[in-house]
Every structure is written in C-alpha cells, then in structure tokens.
Length: 503
Image (cartoon, rainbow, N blue to C red; front, side, top):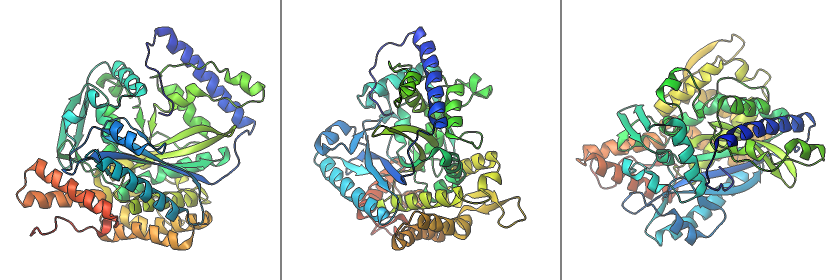
C-alpha cells in the first residue's frame, strides 16, 4: 500500500473530489507519456517477499512488532497480519551474477531475521499460506497496528456492507465467514518488479499475464487453509474472496472483483490505470494538494498520489506501477503471482524463470498474446491454481499451423518455455552458470513433478497415515517444512514424510 495513511473520517464530498482528482492524475499520466518524460531503460528489477512468523511448534506467532524492533532494519517492515513481515531487496540491475547476488543477500537477511525472531520465541517461515493458521487467528484484532490497514479494512467492510464469505472447493471444501479482511493476511507472496519503458510496457505486461499460469503451476506452495486441503495454490481464490467488496447481487451483475486477472490484452500502461478508475470506486479517498497538470506545465514531475493510492487498492496479479526516482518518473510491472518459498534457491529459480521468460516472450515476432485468447490465459491461471504441477494448460501450437492445444504444464515448460527463458536470461546478459543452475531447478521440479504444494500435501498425508489427527498432521508438516527450508536445499530434493517414521 506504500505510503502511511492517517485514519480519519471520510465524508461524502471527499469521494467526488477524489474522483475529479483521479481524472486529473490520469490526464497527467497521459501527458507524461505523450511528452516522453519517462526514464530510459535501466534493466532494473526488484524483489519483495512476505513472510510468516511461527514458533518451534509450527504455530503462528502474533508478534511482528517485537520481531521488527529486534531486526531494526529498513529492509523489513510490517504486513497486514501480526504474524507477517515483508522483506524488500534493493533494486538490482539484471545481468551478470545478479541471481547469485540476490540469493546471497536473501540468505543473509533472512538468516539474521530468523535469529532475531528466535530471541522472542518465533521464527521466519517462507511459505504461501501457513498450514497451521486457524480461522480464529485471522480476526481484526490480529491486524498489524498501522492506520492504513485499519482504514483499508473499514472501507472494504463498509463497501461490502456484510460479512465476507469464503467458499473454496478443492480437494476438500472450506466455507466460513469473516467480519474483516484479516483472512487476506494468510496469503504471503513474492512480488517481482521490472522497470520498463512506456514503449515496452504493454509487451511485458501481456507476456507476464500469458505466463502467470505457468509460474503458478511450477511454483505453487499454498495447498492448505484453516485445516482444509484446497487448491494447490489457494492464495488467489482466498485473496479474491477476502477483499471482495461485492455482495452477491453485484457479483451476479458481473461487477468486477478488486482482485482481478483482467479481461483483455493491453496496448499501453495507460489502459490499465484508466480501467482501474473506470471500474473500481475509491476505497481511500484521501486527496493531496498537488495540481498534477500545473506541475507538468511548470516542467516538474507530479507525484500522482491519488492515482498511486487507488492503484494500490486494485489487486491485479500483474499490476502497473508509477514511481519517481531521483526526480524522473518510471513505470514498472509488478508480478504478484508467486507464493513465498519454499527456499531461497526456489525463490530465485522462480525469479530467473520469470525474468527470462518475460524478456523472450515480449520480443517474439509473433507474440503469444496474438495467438492465445485472453479468456484462455485467465482460464489457465485458474487451472494452474487448482492443480499446480499437474495442471494442463491451453497454449498456441508450435509451428505455422496455429490453433490452440491442451498440454501438460510440465511438458510445456520443459519443451518450449525453459529454452525461451534461457534465451531471455542471455538477452539480459545473465551469467550462463547462474542461468543453468536456477533454470535447472525448474527443470527438476518438472521432471520429478514436485513443488512446494505437492511436497506439503504428500507429507501431510503421510502424517495422517501414521495416525496423526488433522491438526497434528498439519503442525508436523509445518515443522518439517521449516527444518528443510532452513537447510536450504531446493524443494524437489526434499524427502517426503518424516525422518525415522516407517511408511
């Protein structure tokens, strides 16, 4: 959500004023684009990872304030729930040994945070959804004590006007209600940023949308929520339902959800910001004093604060970002598809796969999005979330024949997408040894049909077969996951089950 927001009353005139202000910001963005005021290509990438806090028993610990006080680093900050933290890695230039550098920085930062958390009886867990979270953990009392979260919660609750309903049907079915957006805090993600020029933005965003399903298929790591085994990647349905401002009647009318895959390929970044204004009412109508058009007239760069704030309350899986660095505006594509974890090596492998693939696909002569209907990309995303590494996806047939075929995700990745990702990393001038090592991790996951979600589910079922009750099995799975996560070998090498147990 970015900036700190002061919780105060919001009255009726605020919304109309804010809507007018948003239109001025959008016009300002249009002018900056037309006047080519944006930064030149810098090949900059950034990485944020949301984390969970759990004790040695595998249970969540509601103590991010105590842990952050001990970490005492600007790289770590609060997230929505008291059992969440976020770590931000400073932007890096893509190229050379960047992948190994990122891995090293993450290992150092997470190791330090984990030691500090241990001092107060907690530990860092990098996972999509902590399997031991219970419904009673995700209540408004456990939201981080930050004004902007309180205000966001109040506004989403007010917009909806009734309890949120969670209804996710996967391996098992979960139905429950919540009086707040707190269940959203269960979702811990990796966010990958790529700074792009306006001319490249649409190609990169379209490419990222096309491969979102593949990212989830190989990277799924969230099979459990509130003691139920659901989808292999249960974050997207949970996120959509936990932030849904639409009562059932508005859903039935086809009103769009705030957590949104989108509905079309785009021609420019402007398209996405414009859609966000057209379809989504303001949740935080807080106005800045800036007159963006006057700032541009005077040769300055407007902050477009309202546009940025509003954009932060529309949860696209690939989100457009407007930012200013050293007085120069820039655009980024923020990829929000991946769950956190399991290990640093796995996170960097997912990162390498994404940046390589997006680069290669964005530069193809006949781009995939000219051959794949958008509806098929959206359906692929849903399928990948449900089935993870076993998903079958719709994809353009190779060669000149054209048409769409159905193909197992692992076959698509190994035959077609890994070579593309390798070519993309070469185009970024990434060190070949790093390229081969990290893409090799993706290849091995496909070969063995193992990712974080499949390991969690298989290990949990082992625990049930050994006679443990459901909650005890989830806790045992979580503890074993933490052990292996801190050992750091990639998830495809993890033994299923528990050492010393006879299967």
